[in-house]
Length: 210
Ligand SMILES: [Zn+2]
Image 1 (cartoon, rainbow, N blue to C red):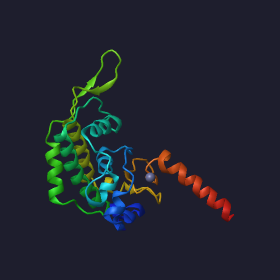
Image 2: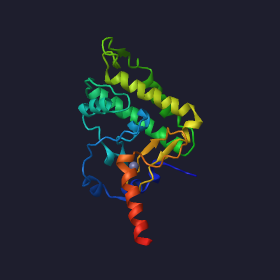
Image 3: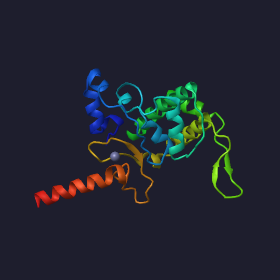
C-alpha cells in the first residue's frame, strides 16, 4: 500500500486549491499532539501546500509548542534563529515521515539535517528534590529540538516503527500519528479530536440506514 502525507482527503483538497483559496483559509492556532515529538513537529505546518496547516508563526509559538507537547519543556525563550532551526528540522522530518509512510528510506539530505539538529546537546533532566517533580535544567529551544531530532532518528532506525505510522481515519483530519497502542489498531489521531466525533457520526448513519 502506498501512503503519503498527500494521500489524506484534506491534503488532496488543499493541493487542488489555488493560491488565493489557500490564502483565504482561516489561520491555525491550535496544536495537535499525538504523543510522538518528531511526528507532532511534522504536523505543525510546512512549505508549499503544507503552509495552510502552519501553527509556528512566531518564536513564542515554538515556546508554547515545546511546553504543551510530549517533551513538556516549559520556560524556553525561542528567538528568530530558533524558529528557523525548528522549521529546517521540520522540513527534514516531514520528508522523512513521508518516506517512511511509503516504506521508503528517507533521502540523505533529510537525514543530514536531522543529524545536524541532533548534534546539539539535548535537554538535561532535572528532579526537584523536595517534590520529586521531573523537569529540565535550564531548557533551551535548541536543546529541545535536539530531542525531537533524536526521536526522528529512533523512528527512522526501526522498520517496526514505520509500520506504526498512521494517517487519521477521519475524512476531514489528515493528521499523521504514531500508533503506540499494544494491538496497533488505533484509527484516530486522538479520541477527543476525531474518535468520538466519528463514532457518533457512524452511529447516526447506522440509525438512519437501519
Ligand atoms: Zn484526526
